[in-house]
Length: 415
Image (cartoon, rainbow, N blue to C red):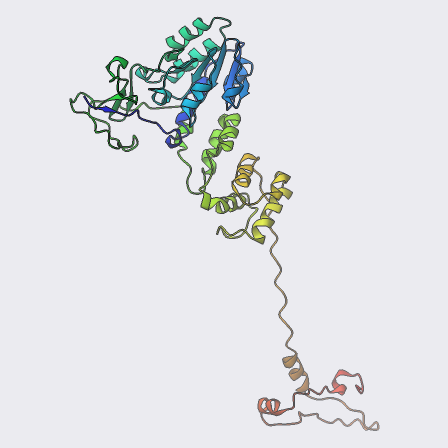
């Protein structure tokens, strides 16, 4: 028999929609009830669930969890340090985790003082049943054992309370099936916890060398096809991962319309952020979409981009954005605020062409005749240009001093 180290599931590599499976299912449960001693770890409960249960108290640090009373704590996931989180839980706590892959992260952790409820891997992580079980447990007062029974009957596996973590059942991950190795079969001299890795019905086992990524694994013939998700959760999961310029506007708005509180949490967690090197271009794109920025989206922050922010504020945007630099915080402020449309920028009038003084003077100097009084005789004298030869060479040979004919202007002598 070949053994392998526990498989660590990196929460950061899962699409954000998967982390919301329990949250979305909780929102479809009807009715209302009074919750008993409900705490939320790091992030609030989904809005629909919070309204049903009459609110909850959010605790950002596990060390702040009270050590008295029968506490029911909701956590969206185990975070980046599952061992540290489990070690900080007091013995009176019952932690309910909404992430369907939480059990794999806990496998092999030593004795746990508190109780932890994770989705049972052998029951395909039925989101609706998990939601019902959590609501029932949250509204049951005083009976800690009754809460665990409700959770277990609804699809959770409750582990801990002084015993090492052992996950029952098997979790399906593409063509790779991972199950817990019975504790009594582990060699006593081993310093590491191990799990049995089975590839279907074959008698060969996987090499503990690097496993293929779950996203790249191809399902084996005969295994169940992935479930089809419909309704609001289909929209959330269809949004996919952000592109280089962040999550597209249409996908963001779909999330905002269905749950504004969830949208705000996802913005704060960076679920919609652009890549670090594309932040300025993403901000220019958002300002251009609202007709506040009329320049090219080139990632160069200059006067045009700053004036676009000023026009955005004048059109009703939050004034606090003016003091920010073009960073991810400005991007989050733009996508969090209500959408506006800046008025069109008036085009700049074209300047009149300069008056051609030389051509004007030439036209005057070639006028036909100029009347001249001569002792009342009525005779007129025709005035001709001084030279009848080519004008251009003569002008080139002149000294550059221009003479004005006072008779033409009718101003007399000019001194």
